Image (cartoon, rainbow, N blue to C red; front, side, top):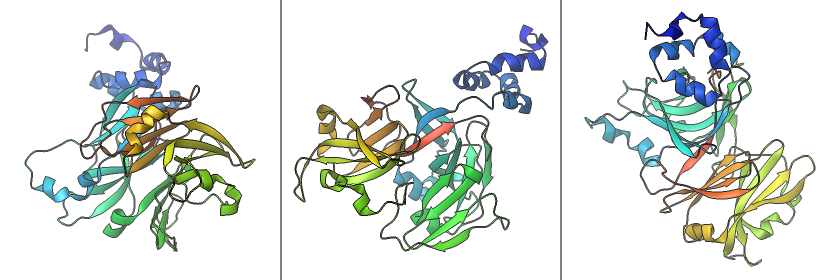
Length: 341
């Protein structure tokens, strides 16, 4: 490689050449050799690609049994490299990013914002289950450990994140912890919550009272909220076949709310033949955001994807990694080489 003609070119010329590539190709080039990796991670090169748009992936959270049964792996002589599994809808393929650069055992990704992944990691030296909340960029292998939390928060708290100043909230029914890089004390702030149930959506309060939703709850069953594109909100649930209290559902409906005009519109309706795969399942998981939403259920073996980037399209995602019962949870990961923890 030292005798390669490419080494005769000045570094700034190489940076200019590679900065014209799309982010996907830059990521591929970084894995070619150590020389390419050093060149394409240099600060001067990073400055050239700050305007590159991020890659929008759908990331999977590890199954619950991977998170809780860590003692089984401690006694195992077989080491497994931890990965973040993501689906690239534009290329229709699964990718994986190694998390082995983290000095933690059993990293468990739970959320993402602004190109960064937030995960729980277990201390490799602690016998007890002592978890820390870590923020990292798996593309650049940089990370930051947030101030220590008690183990109960990692077991029972929902992690909500925001891209501004790395704002993080760990929320339970009774209390909430808040952290931001602007906190002068570099510690978590505690607030009382008193919620009726554990929050499971990153959208916990948008300031609307129940009567302002109109008759939405008369037609949709077990609704879930997902952040839409721009100032839009998606409500997703089963479309009731009639107005009775325990009505069965005919399909899955996606409604879009314009938060400025407070007007609803139908964004999508799962095809009946696709819905048959979910009809008998007692558990349905919905994740995603913007113009892409994934649906997962037990024993289906694949994900259903609603893609509204260029007009609403429904399709199956095959080859889902991981074991378990096939029930997947996840979040949107906007991958970027310039995001700093």
